[in-house]
Amino acid sequence: MSRVALALVLVALLSGGCALFRRDGALADADARAARGDYQVALAAYDSYLKENPDDARAKAVRTLMAELIAARAELAALRDRRDGDVARLRQELSARQAEITRLRADLEALKRTDLQMERPRR
Image 1 (cartoon, rainbow, N blue to C red):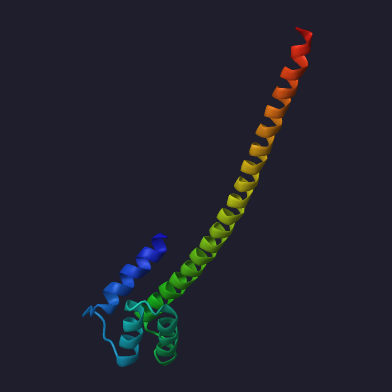
Image 2 (tube, helix red, strand yellow; image 1 turned 45 degrees about the vertical axis):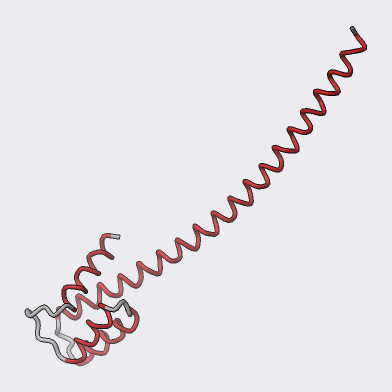
């Protein structure tokens, strides 16, 4: 997750108007889209910009971080889905175990009653 945080900080700094970099319209558009959280469109905008400016190291770095951010977000979504599925499955298993416990307690009580009934005639 530290890469995701780094990517967000870098995108925020670079899209916030950092004066160290010359920015043309396409790059500014890509940065603005990234700052708004429109990562897929921003990635496409960086790709488009880099076709025209293949030597722009800053754009390459941000594009790489953007791709990693998108991949990390997709992985996170997949892990959440998996977790949700696991939780649902475990809840079902718990419910089944609780029903089994209830049934076993009833059986135990029935056995206790039977045992008591069998013990009474002996006395």
